[in-house]
Image (tube, rainbow, N blue to C red):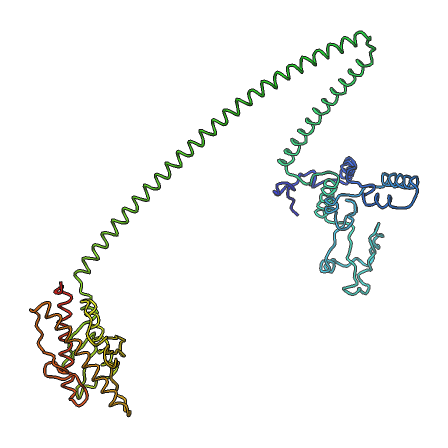
Length: 491
């Protein structure tokens, strides 16, 4: 078994005197220890006193019962504290000279059998029991008692004796045992310091007691009436002088308080003025920094906007938005083919989308030139664009076709032809307006009624090749007008 210090928890090595402690030395040490401190004993608890006070009995009976309880508790051994009770062993250990060691059953069986003529062992003292001989019938395993031996091993005896000694020391003092040498030295220094403080306190009480006794002796002396009156007059005079001095000190203190208040007000005004100065200074710095930041931001924005302007001036957004070209015999706008020829089937959704882009281009050029068409109004709506007459019956013509086979196809194709003729009329008005402003602009194909370059834009009762060629001429005329418009030829 290893021991550790109960303060620093370091392992300890016991002194040889404790290891080989004799029973007589053990009894001497236990006898020299003080008893349990009286502060640990509780004679009458608060709850018991309250219960006694509530009983309907005479006060003399209650006092007698409490006196009897106190006397009985003083004769009885006081109870241990919770810490001491926790350190007590779970069962009562025998004295050092009565200790024994329990052996396991395997060890008992290995003991040799006694000689046949050997004498029987003596009766075990105290609480030990006699066990039957080896040749008797053994008890069952769960009924056999633990074997006790009269001669315990020295190690068990010393360990049990040392442990019991440490428990007794911890129980009868406020310090847990065992302790190492360093912790013991620290404990002795602390106790010595407490002893010195207690001695100083005792000396102070003794001196105070001497002063009290001298004062009582002086008071016991009989003073004459005249001396007492003189003493009273002298004390009154001293009192008046002290009061006058106190009043003078009060007036001086009030004057100093007034001066202090004035100084504090002046200091406060200066602090406020300083705070206002630094506040205005900080605001000025913030405004200056903000203006500098804004100036730098404006300069950066100006440089970026100027670069963007130069880039935009070099860029023709109309050419990017309306890219006019050709794909074989087809004229294209933004990659959409406009027209149909045998052998190359072009779907009607593509043709309708191309017509929508073409109408949007004509509408955009008219807005840029601030030109208003006569008798017609363009309504760009993508693949379902329309042209509306503004005079007469104010009819609306759909600028999109359909390949569906139904009874109203002829009527629809007729309205589609009217829409393409109206578109060609609007393009002719715009071309005439451009020529009136710039006679140098030339167009390769003339527009006469429903024909442009000897090809009709009507789909009904005409061949698809001629219709496709007329649409290609329309895109070419739009490209010339767009180039003139974006190059600033209109002024």
